[in-house]
Figure 1: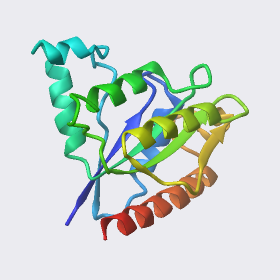
Figure 2 (figure 1 turned 180 degrees about the vertical axis):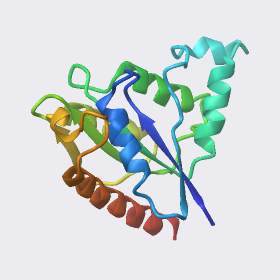
Figure 3 (figure 1 turned 60 degrees about the vertical axis):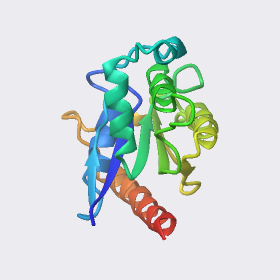
Figure 4 (figure 1 turned 90 degrees about the vertical axis):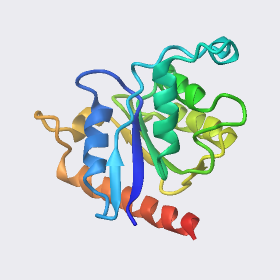
Length: 184
């Protein structure tokens, strides 16, 4: 049976390094996995009143259903001010509500952070882990995946360099093994 994995990209920038990394990661899964890219940039900012007052935006409803349909999730994100980008935090909040209907619940997860900076998105990675723990995403601990000076791993055409693809393959292989252990 095919399993559906969502790759959530924490950057909405047109020429995002993280989108290049995510696109590469998507090609590295075995055939028994279907990889999709839930979009997050169009979601209205989370406001509990929308749900409480019956004014839930259609984009939230669709996104929540899309996240519920996933069997697992991988986050590929940059770091903004030593944390996760606001667009990613908003997506996490939107799909975790209304209370008791957390769409992220119990999904096998993994995190890849990529940044032009030397510390490789370490702050974003660990802030995201903190949020995912609360959302009950079963986040893979090892290998940790940080790509500092990410621009050195991307070719001019936006593709990922071969050595980096080998590293990403190791991460995907570990995630698949993690996913399969949790599925038992």
